[in-house]
Length: 273
Image 1 (cartoon, rainbow, N blue to C red):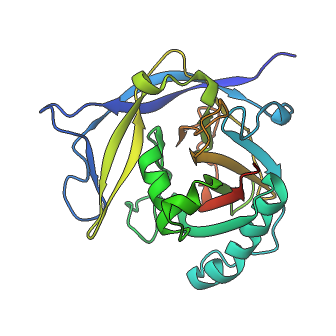
Image 2 (image 1 turned 30 degrees about the horizontal axis):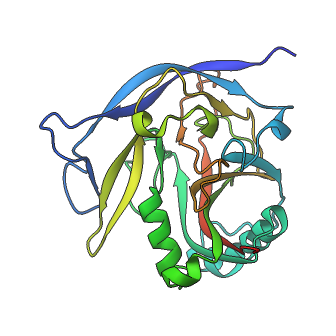
């Protein structure tokens, strides 16, 4: 079978010129970050028809057919009270999680002429991972309400659940890197996230010819991406998947702007002795 692919420019990490530790300021500072972009033309392979080759524990991401009846994506409170519950059931059903804590979501809408703002962000066109292992474990403790000794008895994952909310994706699809192609020491760069009252940490990603990126063309609203941002187990299974939106060169000038929702959730399963 011949694999279909597109060539697109992805933005990778460029270190601060002054040698500072990379930092990203969440709506508290201008400029918002002290590091730059290193754009590279990358081949992104279409996995349409081959979705079952990619799983959370092998590649760090997978696609699940999971239609939703929820449509009120302009109502933040209903998202939290209704859609969050649906995502909890999805993760329990699909990955066998015993406890799920949905703690955050982001709506992304590309609106011509409108710059990003906290209430309505456009697709993020920079290769990144939402959590480092330090940040993922910290979220598991704080958001999951577990002390270290209790957390040690559980497998903990941070999983993002991404869905288009306006039908078939025609522009700015999501590309994900296969975890098996990552060199942790060379490719991943910790970035301090500076919030008004706390610090977090994400990974930015350096360009590497080893990295392999994938997407599903024309993904519809009845499907979701699941991808890992943190995995507590270090036994060889995938622990994360770098991801980014990208400008699809096959999209026509009249392509419908992408609208999507990304949920962030903790998934816990008790370890068996």
